[in-house]
Length: 358
View 1 (tube, helix red, strand yellow):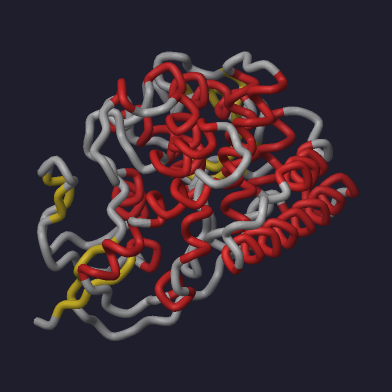
View 2 (cartoon, rainbow, N blue to C red):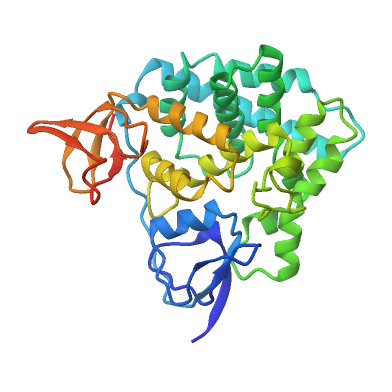
């Protein structure tokens, strides 16, 4: 049966894995002939698997699904947030393309900070920010909109970690510029859906080194440069480009790595809406403690789950209810109040939160 290599971002449920899949430190995570599911695709992204080989099947046409919390999108606050977000993304696009065309010019850091702050100022707090971001998942821009998302998520993590205002500003810029190296790559490579050669994969991963080198000539905090270089490094040494382990990875890069992974895993694909944050939190808990800085990761997970307290959700059984209590022993398994009583997901191992409704 014929095989082809695809980017993981183009993977879809139902595809069949054509080879065993290993991490960079030779840990096998998916066996050959495994049929892809949403969960397995999420695991691939979690382990920074950029591409996979699949067996060629008949092409299917997938239909986008409706996004959740449609009522939030009709609010005046969301419309203003959306406007500021789109403006910031457009400005970031123009700034980075001008930078790529002429690397010697100084980047307008003050303007980048101002645009991002304008967007952040349209959210009341961390909870409101994440509700807004989860309603922005109809944007398929994987560089500029993603960079804005990572900047704002990093900002929220910095607040939860008790950062000073100056460090928050620098951390937000680190999130905004973490993928700057991709601006220097061919657009055809970034958008390619066909087979990828080994050289193309290497070129794609080199965006970290290219980003770091391009920022060395800019008046930015060194932690911003390190975030561009190290946001795909993992604490167990399985990341890239240098296979750094926990003591070698800059603290800003560790934060941006969490924000980057969370945004990538909760972004939509044409065949499904964004993965439920509770599914992603469960994966972080079960497999992420060796990959990401424990303090940063747990602070983030507790913060993100707290933003969904009192949200209305749908369970894997189809039952709907309200999250009334967070289980600190297993953040992905809260207490749910339904019409018929209470469901403690910590004790109901077969039930999960599959969708946030409001």
